[in-house]
Image (cartoon, rainbow, N blue to C red):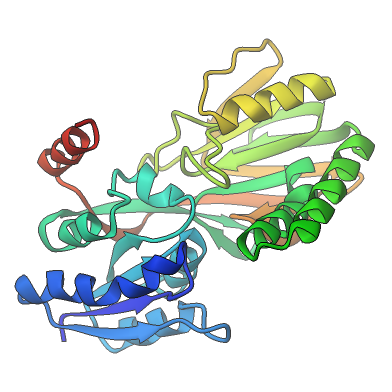
Length: 310
């Protein structure tokens, strides 16, 4: 056996569940022997990945959305197993950040003909993340976003409206909080703000681009917040990030560090890649070159870009 593919049959659209035979056909034509494992509500992929790695499987392929990918990555921590990504989710932020095509068949071709890259992970207290840590307002409204997402996905309009209402109430009632940041154990910053984001990748969530210069392989984390913003400035920053548009404001602060300590008064909610993990204080650090992943060669990137623009 050359590889294990961990396939989430519920990721993305209903059509994705029919893709497995086509993906296996790509691997078969490249003489790659692949064993199939399916995720379930009880098994999100972490255990399947860990078992494969412990059994010496050199390549674990994950076919699913960002949540499934994150689960599989947790199962590969501290191993030499290479990760292959076939994006099948709604946003596919990690794949986009790594220039992996969002077409599943093209992504499968990257796995057999691409190159290995080593990327960073992040750690916040005892939790690992790929994309971002959010402190403050964003973490407080994330549950409302999940309500909206599930309501839309399951065609339950009242649930979606309920989630929107909860999120709006949280936003309207949220106030500035005192934040103390310490970078790399040296430089300290104080502010009153709505939220702080610590980014390992440029994109996260619903295609937010808060740190467009963040790189998954630079050994650093990008810290983003606004100093004493009004609610409307915060909203403008939010919508600019959602549209991946440049945002220029004298209150915007962006720093880079390898280790960040965050304290607040009172304690603020915290999420890591959309998962609630508690409240401040937290310590966030980068784990350089922690994961090997298949990515396109420069020639493949150019080829896929040309195809997309036709």
